[in-house]
Image (cartoon, rainbow, N blue to C red; front, side):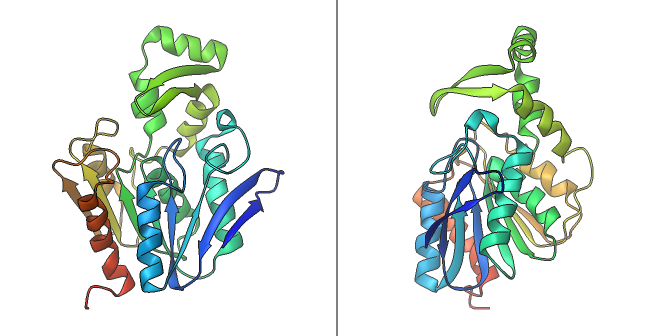
Length: 249
């Protein structure tokens, strides 16, 4: 089912919902990514094959959703995720977050702990606005960002990325890696050790900070940031299967 929902302020969010059995798999895309990437579409095919419910969507300013990318923050994109989840699903969820989506998934899991049955992070990037953006900026870049409200940073994936002062400052309200992360559901963290964007050590630190005991980190020695090769997608399916009763157990 294709649909749009109003998040409450007139901005329409694009949603794709595949009906099926519980729990519902929710895919949370990365920064400047969308719900039509390789990982999301692989999960759609997997869920369709097994009759599993799945939800995917685009944050505001991304993909098919309305709104301007430059107006987005970690707060607003988390609110997008919660609005879509609350308006289109019921029952337990398995949150699958890619890159920034891993951060959003963690925040959503904390907001809906009783609904989150499991969480899978793919090159999860909590705190990236501070650790990978602000900390990497030279003093002149920081000064320009603070004065102009936006800094356009070159990207290997396309046109320069507009990084806003609001994104950086709002991100500081949601930093996770400097303290315990109260999360009791099973967590699986997949990370490529050739990731040029998010250091693989981030997943190790994240695993350390999560308070629950059922946390596993899987490192893919030759994996990049996208983790979208056939072998990577097969690994994702293998990690997901036990939560769906597809492992023979």
